[in-house]
Amino acid sequence: MRTMTIVAIATMLAAAPALGQNAGTAPQVAAAGAATPAAHAASIKPAAASTPESRSAAALALSHEPTFDEGTAQRIQEAALSYSDLAVRGGWPMIPADAKFALDAPGPNDDLLRQRLLISGDLAADKATGPFDEVVAEAVMRFQSRHGLAPTGTVNPRTLAALNVPVQKRIKQLEASLERLENMNFQFGQRYVVVNLPAAFAEAVENDKVVRRYRVIVGKTEKPSPTLTAEITSVNLNPTWTVPSSISKTEISAHMRKDPNYLARMHMDVLDAHDNPIDPHSVDWSGTHTPNFTVRQQNGAWNALGAVKIDMPNPYSVYMHDTNQRNLFSDDYRFDSHGCSRVDNVRDLAAWLLQEEMPKWNRAAIDAAIATGQREDIVLPKKVPVAWIYLTAWMTRDQTIQFRNDIYDQDEQLLEATAEEAAFFNKAANHPLTAHLAQ
Image (cartoon, rainbow, N blue to C red):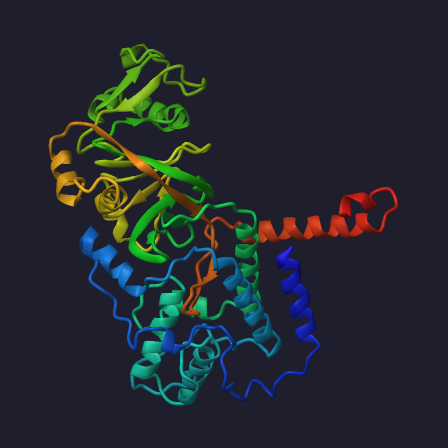
């Protein structure tokens, strides 16, 4: 297992002498492979994000480097080894929780902040001392961008918390991300789509370059979106929504117990096994039994799927779609679905999916078809691969190392399971009755 290799090399590095670094001396060289100021724009300015188009344009402007391509696993391994080396050298300093930083207002922790940013490659080595100034603010922006935070340049509580995550935890994130990729079998194509769940972003990749990037809303912590690989087969305009039976049993039933007119207000129909309508008042809404009926929401402005659904058959019955609550895309915290992925500016993604093989379906044509209010299912002549991945740490081709919060608390669980499996096989290798298991 590659994770075990990283741990072994990190152990060897620990036996090597440290390179003259202590709490009172700022290191002059960032970790090999860490993000460097040259790898970013000179200044990352937060873009106005008031419309779906401006939000996706701002997201794309940050980088055209894919989160997931055929070289991602190798780069994550390189980053993990680099951070293991950094850990051996002492890691980075912790900044006091009550530290305050303001432009051109010297403070007692200014050099400590500079040292922290220098070690992670966000600040140039010749900027190791001085007050909090524009140079440091730009370095903070680079750090924030790499950690999925709004690039404001100010050290707010969330930024300070991210700065103080120990290097050992960052190594664990890299190891867990690498372990996941080793168990994936994704067929990369010339064109493919990736949703990275912890980052809450989707990328449309063409010829190894991100050509579209969108904010997405994925599963709540109690209803996490699954990791999967599939193929996008069709685009549905003005779709209806067939409510999953689990939602009908819990949420719909609860609404109907409180308000018998709920279904009518939500433009929902109750159907039998043959799609024949059923009187809602004849249904048992106690929620104690699995529904023997189907609830389907009519298409229209009220529909939970919005105006577009992107079909991608998979064992989890999840898909990508629009929403009638588009204000949610403005939030930084975008973990609010039942497992499906709501896509900001989804009409643009639909146009990208369709136009290579069906050029008539440009954005204007999609908008016009939606305006008719009629459902239309457009089958893709050539299926597009799609992967929903769970990477809390990765490195792009420009050597930028990215981190995101382990929103579903899956990293530690995976590493514990991997360690238990390794321990089992190590023990089996030394037992005469089970040695064959380790072969």
